[in-house]
Image (tube, rainbow, N blue to C red; front, side):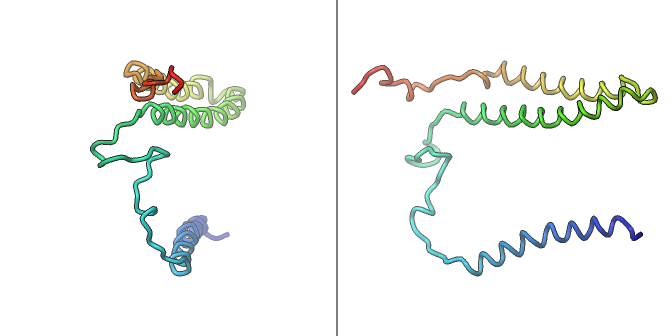
Length: 139
């Protein structure tokens, strides 16, 4: 059998070559039509007004989305750990401490991060004064 690093190297070359070749071919084949709409700033649905120094919008949506992504990845990492944990606990050589301690540290770091975010108000949904202005009236 050949060296396994050869297969890993070949996979790395293919993983880099395919996207680079796709970008090269698309840059050669696509039409170039510069227009004003393509050059304007687009910030996740917010219509820019004025310069970038004057744009004011509520960042709370982005904070909640970022926290969701962080804790969603936590769930993705915990699920395989629980499957492995079940098999490792039954093995007397591994023991419960060696299996449980890394996950307790991982969850502890996430709890500290959530506490920090909570203390700084990242999980409180606060409406901006601009959004609430005239919200109760039907004009």
